[in-house]
Length: 328
Image 1 (spheres, rainbow, N blue to C red):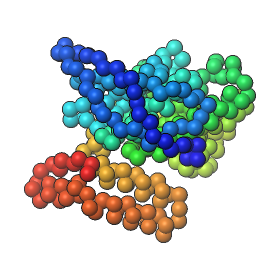
Image 2: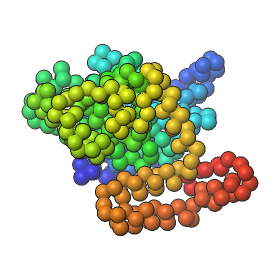
Image 3: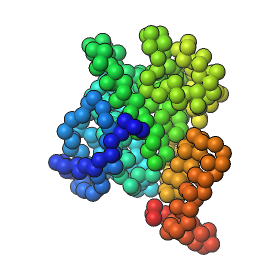
Image 4: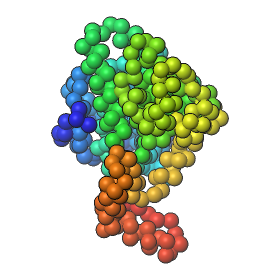
């Protein structure tokens, strides 16, 4: 996380539009009043702050104007609190170009700055492909220093993704190669369809995974299997991915989003502060010895004792009703 630089920033030049719901009833957009993001990336692609476009229909759609290939959707009604990041670069099978990386970065920052978000999903708008990895056509035009800058920025973006306080879920249908799989590895949960193909093929290009693959894969599935997959660049099917613990669920092709949304909805019903503290306790606890991990757990638990949500949970249990958590 040393690559991140803490600063405060205000989004400006918001554009408001009127969109139509599925029933063709116009509903005006509303200013969400997001607070300033807590952090920004220190990378080779700095640019002036980009405007954000908010619209409100049945699903609230937030689009980063910095990239047409990354779209941020916030669900509403009973699913309020769930946000989806959609990868949408069909001409390149969602290969991550410099422009797309900027879009991902801004999307992650937007989610991080919004306290009303409880869970985030990363999906593809392209059938039968999640993300093909880095844009190798663009890579061929880069100098050595530009390649290094790009890889450093990609690594920082995925580290930022991993460090988000909320649960994150990658929805994998089809190919998840190279940087695409590394992005999925930076998420808390991975759901794939049976037709999914997952691979870190970098050694076939005489390089290694450079955006966290050599770090996160062995921590997830074990050193020996991770070495085999990285050394050989072998493609793993959805079923095999589940058998080795690379994904949480493998469902029939085309149904990964439904399963991921089901899990997101379950998480969204729980106390949001408790979910954040649970993630913190698990992530930080795994990096230290058991005694230190228990201290981390204790500190996280203490932070929940004086919350209104804890009292609401007890009251709802006594009154035999669903709790109404507010993240307070």
